[in-house]
Amino acid sequence: MSGFFGSVWWLLVALGVLVTFHEFGHFWVARRCGVKVLRFSVGFGNPLWTHIGKDGTEYVLAAIPLGGYVRMLDEREGDVPAQQRHLAFNNKPVLQRIAIVAAGPFANLLLAFLLLWGMLVIGRPDYAPVVGQATALAAQAGLQPGDRVLSVGDRATPTWSELVMALNVDALDRKPVLLQLQRKDGSTAERTLPLQVLPTTVDELHALAAIGLVPRHLLLPALVGSVRENSPAWGVLAEGDRITAIDAHTVSSFEDIAPLVARLGARGGPGMVEVERDGERLALELTPTRLAGKDGQSHFILGITNATPVEPPHDALLRLGPLAAVPAAIRETGYQARQIVDMVARAVAGKVSVQNTVSGPITIARAANDFAQRGPAWFLNFLALLSVSLALINLLPIPVLDGGHLLYYLIELIIRRPVGERVMVVGQYLGLAMIAGLMGLAFYNDILHLMS
Image (cartoon, rainbow, N blue to C red; front, side):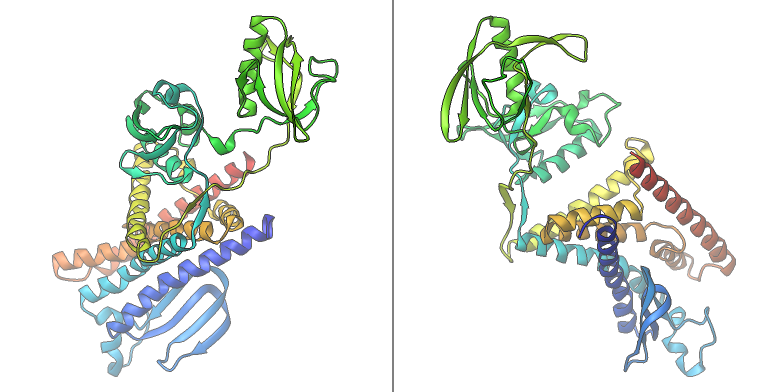
């Protein structure tokens, strides 16, 4: 499933799972605290399906699957018979009310752990953290093609995804980071990336390119796609040829060709270009020619373009056994939570762009579809990140969110009486205004992303 309908479908799946688990957290703890639950609804609007349980709770699946709620017996929302007042939420001790409200975000953190555990047990296909090209800061630090990055700082990097996540974090903070490497010959080495010298204009989306790291799996194979007429390669090289060497220098990727051709041209005279064609190895004589480029400077060329690249097969798998996956999933849940908190702090401090920090439903839907296409393990990883985000967002001390209610109850613990009704009403309006502002920013960012 792809495109618009795929994005909508996977967004609904993601929201359905996350919201149901969140509301079930409130529901389960409320029942354990002796609160009567009137309705457990997944979605808003007109009910599509309704069931009255033996416990008297109305279970509802509603028409608008963009949220959900648990309605409890509460004297502030309607008349409560005298014989049921002990079952009302507002009559429970403040610590029980805190537990009920906090149960929703806690349920999302628990769900994130379960999803990450499932991802690790299933196994997430990925690419090995092997350097394909090293330029700029990476070259200055001594990284070389073929190096496998074992860790970035204190974070192990078993796959390229972990490497990118760890490097982006350190790049945002502009601090040097120690890399543990495994060289081609099997030896180990340490190198320090001087990320503190990254220009301030480099944002989180372009940090890896500014560092100068290109992964091995993104290098273009040295396959000839087309040959320009009347160029040096015309009539010598053919579409589909795999170039293996130029002037006795090995060619590993298409990116190796230009500098070797430039070296051959500077030397003058013809050179041997070795290729594989239809299972045969051929050595062909070619002399590069100069051609003016778009930058106004002349370059030595052979007159070939690369073949249309295809996505290479995965060469790494992040997988653990069921027992080993338990502590790993706990660590990863904590890591994701810390990174989200730190990212919000960076956004407030102006270190990262709010445009790349706050995303709306359109961006989330497109991401959900993209991760779903990669396979179940990738989608579980995506759901876990969303679940952690939902937990932390709900813990923000904004009235109408769980965090706002927790703030009221903490104040009640301190002053030993409930917060006044007028204060709560004012807080509700302020909270709604803040939520509306965040939603407006999220939709604005979505539109910018679509336009770009």
